[in-house]
Amino acid sequence: MRKIWIITLFPNFFDSLINFGITGSALRGERGADVEIKTVQLRNYTSRDYKGVDDSPYGGGAGMVMRADILKEALLKGVVDPGGYGEKFREKLHIIFPSPRGITWNNSYCKKFAQRLSVKDSKDIVFICGRYEGIDERFLNLYVDEQISIGDYILTGGEIPTMAIIDSSLRFLDGVLGNKESSDHESFQTHLLEHPQFTRPKVFDGIEVPDVLLSGHHQNIEKYNKSESQRITKIHRPDLLLKKEDE
Image (tube, rainbow, N blue to C red; front, side, top):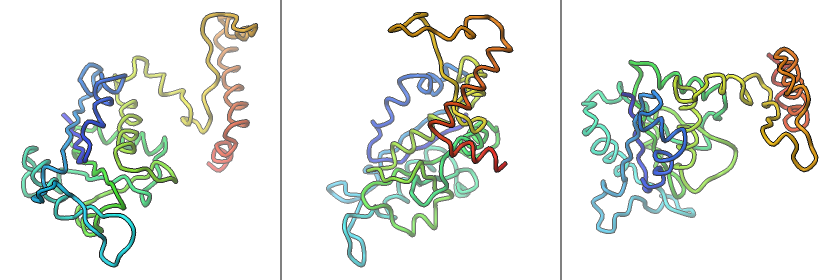
């Protein structure tokens, strides 16, 4: 079973990810995904009486910085030891720090990440959820394998990016979505946004469902949906069309 370890100050943050929705049922083993999440409370690995995990930055500056020694202790005692990874744990774990420095998370990279989760002999994953002004640079250089950014903005911690990465990538694992085509035809798969969707009632506030969708003619429906995808993309995300042209 592939394990995803999360070192965080707020383990309860991930209760909703595990307990609700498609991702939750996948993580509980109900949809064929062989993935398990384990959270590690960072405060359990500090010797400081008040459970502090941060300190003032050398050189001055606003805010506090998470200490490298406490992060290392949490990694070794909270992940490596209980996981049985041994002295050569760097060969068995891939350690990720969500950060503005990182590669931008997008659909293409998401699929590659999902493939990594599904390969039998690939490494288990460890997420380090930062807080405050960040974490000591020495821990990044010595122990972090990869940094990932979910966009050009700042959040108060790494928990939300970690959940976004896990939630979006698990959808590509076999069996997680009831219908595999659900992920094949979604937005961003072909540099186009998904076409508009309709369901009952047939008439809503005087607006009817397009006739072609009621025709039962699959070729015409496919042609219509493709045309609508292009129209919607041109209106809302024309930048995606430029990426398509560049390929």
